[in-house]
Length: 218
Image (cartoon, rainbow, N blue to C red; front, side, top):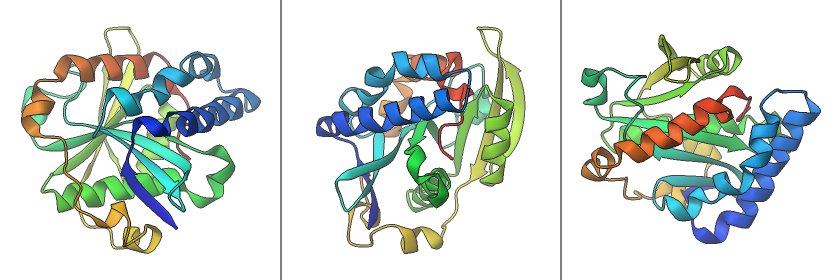
């Protein structure tokens, strides 16, 4: 049975193993960002300890980690306007899934879960950005709409996408109804999110430099 739950520091070994597998898959498929991923496996896995309550893991039978994502409440200021940043939104960052399970479309499941959770929590939108046109096209297959393309401080093009929060009944059929996915886990507070703008910008900036340029969550 699949379930989404908040990540804990104990998840770090499992996360590192899954992220390393994704890096190896990227190398085998000659994707250009695999070297960056290989250098940052443990840093990315360590987000489970550095960002408690923000990072979530997708597990099977409550132990094997098949995917992860981080929900931020703030965005990089160069991607969204001040008016958009004032709206209630989840910002998905660092979504990674186990490449051996690609046939199960776990990246789409995580996206649908976030959209459904946002609706349950009274959040209006789910947003994400990336620097890869192929990844932007993949997100659009998940019903995210391309809002704009902007130039980042590093000179790259960033694709900003969003999807309206709504209930997704199919999520309940995939995820455990008696596990964490069925509970009303406390979302990160808005005040905390607003005070963490610099941290969000740092995470997103690092993503733009390499992580978001890859096929992370097919």
